[in-house]
Image 1 (cartoon, rainbow, N blue to C red):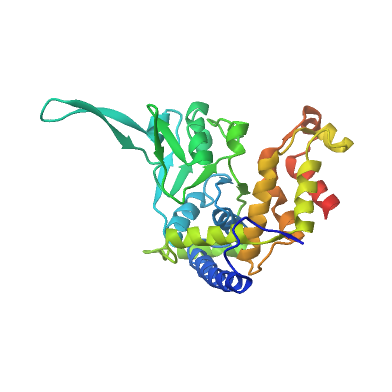
Image 2: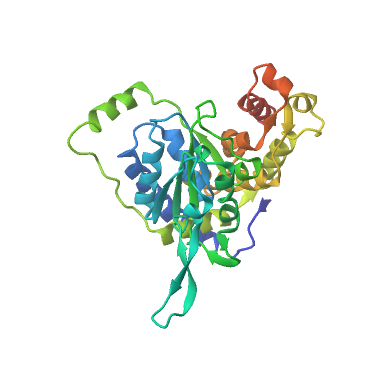
Length: 335
């Protein structure tokens, strides 16, 4: 038995044909990204999965790991209208959302005109998001969840598709502000970017310090990306995958009958985490050329989907534990 979406317009044969076409497009996109981003296959996979699932991603890593380059490359390859905002402590909400200005015409009649901010893009790169004040960070909340902004009481819809890929330096860096829990929950995934492997770094040295660099090739259009995102939502999910998602997410919450979780976790993931896991598992299956997700997809995505939706108790932090440790134990239990 499978759990399907409400849209049943596609037959099984049409579904297979659409998936094969989408897989070919995704494979070409991966190849184009690999021409610019060396190594980091897991990072590219998770970021692409987040976009295919129609969500936002938080890229976390120390400076100099090509986070900005990755976002720019994704925008070029996927044919998205991309804009970049460098977050700084003095950045104001209006610098992102836009503002109204008072204008006077030739008849001396005055009226307000809305000037859109950089958020009116299909791919917004929020560079070093945790360097801005909490007030400015919170300005992204409504747009990330509701896909529109409200300025002076007027609603302004954002372009479709709309994705936020935010980069963040570790909180140990000076001049950073932790993101509010409500805003963290708006990100479909947190993707941790680690130092490259030796051979990948060797290739970086040889291919990026010459006279010219390889430019990202455009592979698909924004409309094609939306079609693939719709296909992802049509993919069937088996009952055992649904049960694995529910067991994993619910077992990560205090008060669920797990004494170890009660001792180590202050608060756990909500239903939005279950939704995110379901969508990401579908997208990962399509990314790998499969028509339906498996429990392995759920377990592989547990860390990037759950880690920013959980907080440890003081006792757990005092013991030197991390959220990753807790999730790894939960994955072993469910797996």
